[in-house]
Image (cartoon, rainbow, N blue to C red; front, side, top):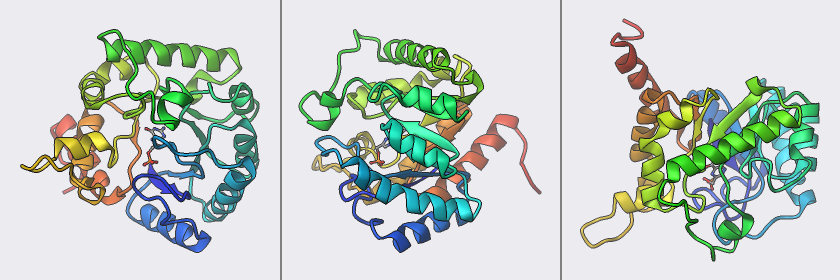
Length: 273
Ligand code: PMM
């Protein structure tokens, strides 16, 4: 899944794709690099980000969605708003990616069910933890993997109760959302506990801060965002070996290679030649 954030303030690519033509060209480049799905978001989820108006979110997301669907590109729409999801699904969105796992908008799961659409349900604690930047890390009672797994099970149950087809549910541990580096690595280490639930799992580590801290230099300076793509691809390989369904990344080409490496390693055979 290649990311196109049509936002002014996303931490890794904010402001770069606000112009419609730039966003379309960027998405086409990601498809040419081998992305199977483009994730379009009109609202940043980074700590401290302010919410955009619903109408602004629609204005950012829908024209890009329509242009990509006209090219036959599968598109997921990253939104927490049921009305944005409904418009996106009416305009041909392939998947709804809700970082709140259906918690931010009480109508979201019903909208997804009504459209018989696939949905990505991410582990999310509360808007305050993330948006104000005040909450920071949540308390997981010493077992972040178990806490995230149980939460995601409850979100899947809620989606099924709202009429979402179980085959249409993808789970996501929400790396970096109210989690510190230790939590994120514990979740990546314990990914099999999430894939073991029987739902496809999406891993979205790309360029996140915990990668920057892992790669800090001798002076303790965190690696800048532009220097995090090789490590992101390494996480893609690990995630693929652990049975993830997909990865959400900004730089697609290295992750496509990483998936090929993981497939060859997993089978013990080269895919081609
Ligand atoms: N992270 C961000 C945005 N959308 N969607 C899912 N499903 N999972 C995530 O972890 C996730 C997401 C924030 O990162 P960005 O600013 O690079 O988009």
